[in-house]
Image 1 (spheres, helix red, strand yellow):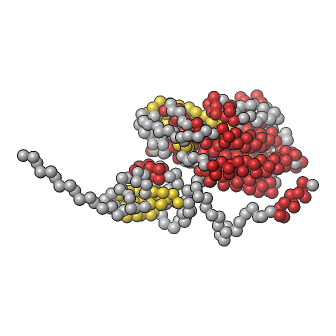
Image 2: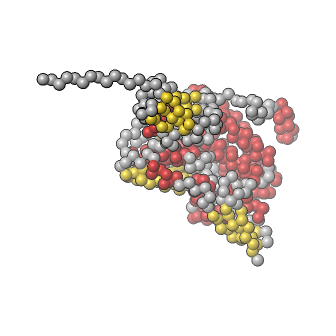
Image 3: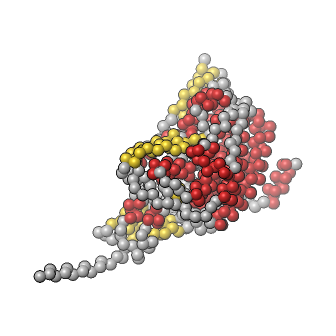
Length: 122
Length: 358
């Protein structure tokens, strides 16, 4: 009797698997897919580089660039929580594997004109 | 005359490499010599290059199956070192994620075990149910297996109302499904023929050798860290230790199935009693001194020792994992067992070699 129940439920049930490369499941909105960097507000403070556990982020002040090594990133999102300007965020789209090892983004930071030195008081 | 046969390091029933040299007389095992060290990664030394917050992520990568519980134990140890109390809501979230971890670990083990004695359809059934738990974990924590929910001072993500509805729905559907597979594991004639009376470990021997987890409880010892003051939040959650008296492979399987049902009860009670409020407190300063903390993992009791020296990096981290404690009892169980039953006996301690070697 138990087996008959099982057979009947399995006939009426949808398959438990899906044809993966053709049918791709929508990612959940909470899923940590990849890190998105918005260079507009970045001040090159380097906090993300300091907080990153696997040393995947490199911030170079001299070249004004921000680098992320995709092969090292463990998606812990420490950099996202630590960014003071909120330029880093998480996207729920899955990162394409092996497309590029390093993402290098130039930061359009404008050098502020240096304030003229105050004239020595006489 | 005896023959020596190597079992592993690569074997169809073993997900991870452990090598056992079996001394065999006719068809019966007479002696065993284990050898470990195939996946040693030196993580305990690696923490000297990371600060104490970053070490959480290193600890989570000790094991792929009980990753959240490794992270939770480490953060609880460091919080003990700082002498801080974390908010109650954060503690409840840790309990819920820890029990999700236990659910998916036990369902994975039941599947592997069914595959071990040749019951393929049961294997697929268990792993299908595990997928539901992984989906819920993915929506709560953002990842399927490495959850990264715990951090020093609290948790990283809060539970929303959607998450709670989803957890309750999962509990309802899993309860009927687990009761379905329980019928097969407990009543099936073939399964009973393979498991009952196999590799018996008596209550006294299991206690003296220092066995941990379901292997210890399967032998009649009602010992569980969740009952002790070390993790006393479980007192209010209707937790009961699962115990079986027989001490054979069949008893250990029944203990794990009972623990699955207990976990569902704990999750339901934790959701009903979870208070509103903050999920983390800020921890300031650098750790000094020593601390020890223990937690009940799916495989048994894990112990973390931490020593800080006033800098941001820890001086020493030491982990004692449940599989390490279970290997001596495995060596006592194997003599007298037939060669064909060796894979089943090895699987009943739920070996996790990457935990043991770190």
